Amino acid sequence: MVDEPRAEETFLENSFGTVTSRRVIYNRAKGYFSGGSREDIPLKHVTAVRLETSRSILGGIVCLLFGMAMLVGNLNGVAKVFGLLLLAVGVLCLWGSPRVVVNTAGNDLRPAKGAPWQQGEATSFVEALRAQLFRE
Image 1 (cartoon, helix red, strand yellow):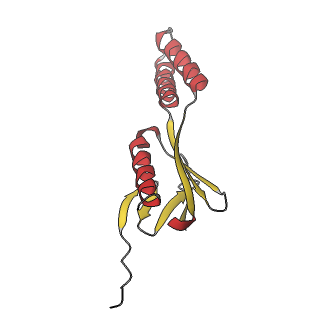
Image 2: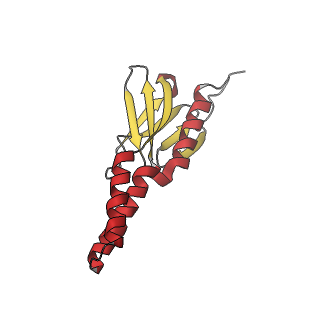
Image 3: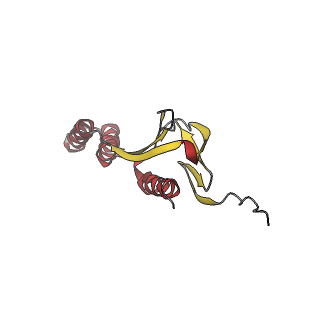
């Protein structure tokens, strides 16, 4: 009786990439304004994966302060709209952006950064990849 090779099974697919039973299809160098590049990495070459959250505390506080000053100040409507935009940017800076880093056997770090509201997708991607790396 000959064992047939198992078909590749997909466990997760989202904006950070795809995790299958044999490989990870990863959107490398993904950022705010770039889609990155697709990279197929066999699971046996992946040594680690981590999830980081990058925040800009100082930038967020400065944007919030300037935004509130523009809203409270005796300025025209355009300045108030600009103040609202600064408030939004400040909140996003303080909220933080997820960053998924995949490390391979060649010690190559492959980061992908997402928007603050993609934290759940980043967490799901890291958990699915870890489940495949450490399965028994």
